[in-house]
Length: 97
Image (cartoon, rainbow, N blue to C red):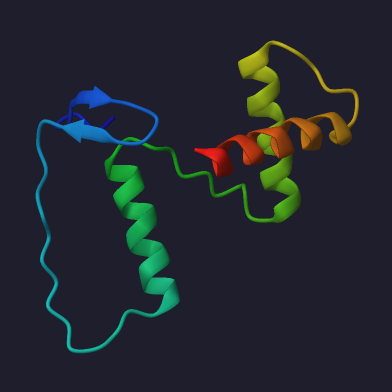
């Protein structure tokens, strides 16, 4: 996390920070998709998330997801099919929430 921001409470659905500065941008026009995406990325970076510029395709995203799931579960998938199976289960669980 950035030096001046400390989380007070964290959960799977939200995070409460000890400091938040609302940046008001007055605009008479709508944001482009690129501007909105850049703002989202900056907001997430300010919340302490890492921006991975090397994840720039569906394939690299799935490879990163596979790596993260393997690390989290201390296992190794022999094929991408095993990872896809786990992801499908996770998606079904999220829909039921």
